[in-house]
Length: 219
Image 1: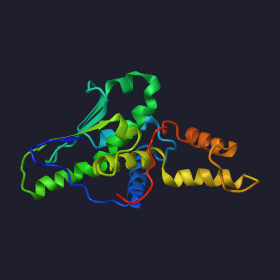
Image 2 (image 1 turned 90 degrees about the vertical axis):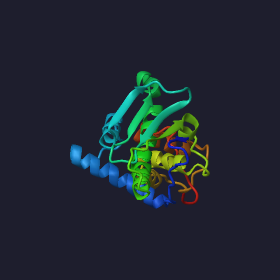
Image 3 (image 1 turned 180 degrees about the vertical axis):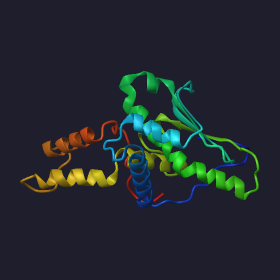
Image 4 (image 1 turned 90 degrees about the horizontal axis):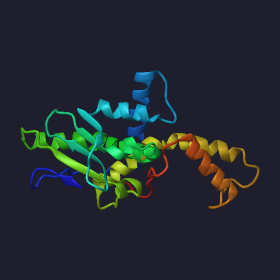
C-alpha cells in the first residue's frame, strides 16, 4: 500500500526473474566482498541490517507501526536517501527473527528497485520537491507473497526470496544432495528424502523460513 502526494504513484516496469536474481546476487556479493573480504552464506541478520543501512538515511528497527504492518519504506523524489521503519516487536522478540529477516529483505527490495525509480519519475516530471511516498508492507504480502496485481509488493517479495535463498546456492545444495542418492533423482513430495532436503535447505539458510520463492511468469 502506497501513500504519497495526491495522484502520484510509483510505476514499476516488468522485470524478468533472471534480472531480479542477478541483481540480488550482485548486491550481496559486492557488499560482502567489500566489507568482509569474502562471501557470507548464509547471510547473518546483522549483515543484512548493515546492507540496508547503506541504502537508507534512517533505519529504525523499533518503530511503532499500525497492527499488521511489519515494515514501511518511505522514498523521496529528491537525492535524499529513503527511510525504513521496522515493527519494534520483530526486533524485541528473539523468536521472531525469521519474520525480521524476511521483512528486512522485503524492504531492501523496495530500496533496490523502487526508490531509484520514484526519484527518477519525480525528476523527469520536474518535481523539485522531496515528494515522499510511503510503502507500507503487511505481514501477508511479505509471508505469502503479494498478488501479481500489486506489482510493487510482488517484486519486493521476490527480492526477499532471492536474497535469503539465492538461486545459485540452492541449486548447488540440491545438486549435491541428489548426487548422493542411490535411487531415482526424482523426489516425491512428503517422502523421507524430500523432507530431509527441505531440512537441509532450512539449515543452510537459517531465517529463510517463510521467504517467498515466486515461480511463474516475469513480473
